[in-house]
Image (cartoon, rainbow, N blue to C red; front, side):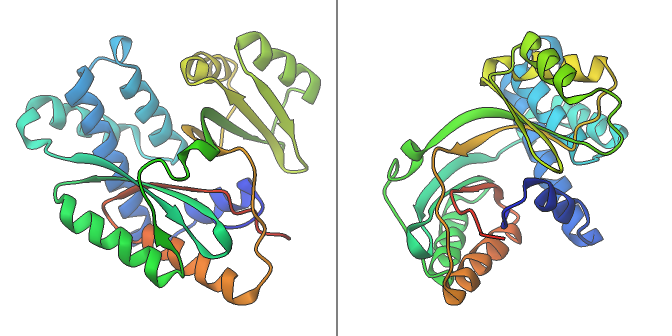
Length: 244
């Protein structure tokens, strides 16, 4: 989650050791289970499940693991007892931070998130204190390497499929959609065998904050590392844009 390159961040996340990958798959399994609980096990009528599956596949979660998680949740809905909660606050240098959790112990989750903010030189705030600085969007990332379609064709193709924005970088392309159009764009890409390195609905900051002080950078990385290691934490969003 740290750093200036979205593609580098994702490669770093996917290259984590087995224990860290296990935590990622546990989180994805929770998202799948919650999606089944609230909308059923059929993708056709459950957009939340479609989103969760897309995210799991983008993280290289094996198809049989995804299917097992869905079947398990569908077979025992009473066992899916997670609560969702969102925490907002500030990191060092006024960085806006949003933390989303799925937990079976809300008190434990709240204490752990507060601990991460404190250790990272930040502070928790009231609900809504920073969420207005973010927009909920669908984000799809595609690497240039191995892509068989040229940039202009890809831009026109995704626009026709419903994308709102198309951002080209040296490493690849960032495609932004409205949440309701996310699946249509993602499925259009899948239909053309265009591989994605990331596909999810997330909170995108409207503006970013640069941290240049070594101590602030150290604190921000520490906060994110602690949150990454917390099994209750599903997602962390912030508006930190570290300079190269």
